[in-house]
Image (cartoon, rainbow, N blue to C red; front, side, top):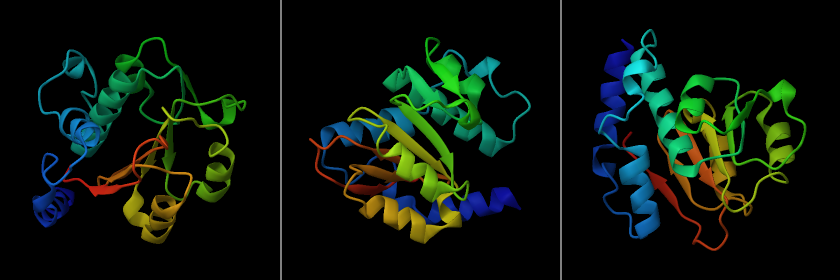
Length: 179
């Protein structure tokens, strides 16, 4: 049943495949070579053997994001193995272990007291930080607020998660990607 839902979501976003319509070269590169990269990476065979197809898909996205941005500090309660495989020198903290330092990559789940966590995090991010919010389709209004917030920059809606970048030198833009 979940596979059927995935097919319906994919078909509804067919016009947003592989970065079509993205005018910014840097945003196109992220969409094409980080988000929708289809070539197998060196760690894929060792990661996620027992995961469901969606966990594997999301884990591989986190692996590619960590491999691309090479974060020093990551806050995430899930996908630790994927994040560390993408960036071996990263320090991956859970939310209960987070002690307030500046963050390079953050993974949140929609509904996990997200308003309070975002209020805290907006002061702990900088231009190169990446925020990943899982299950954005659970609360579309909250996702719309995050996209519209003046503290956020470029955002990507992947349906299963949203990516938020904070670089103010780039034009604020929102993309829907068929992931």
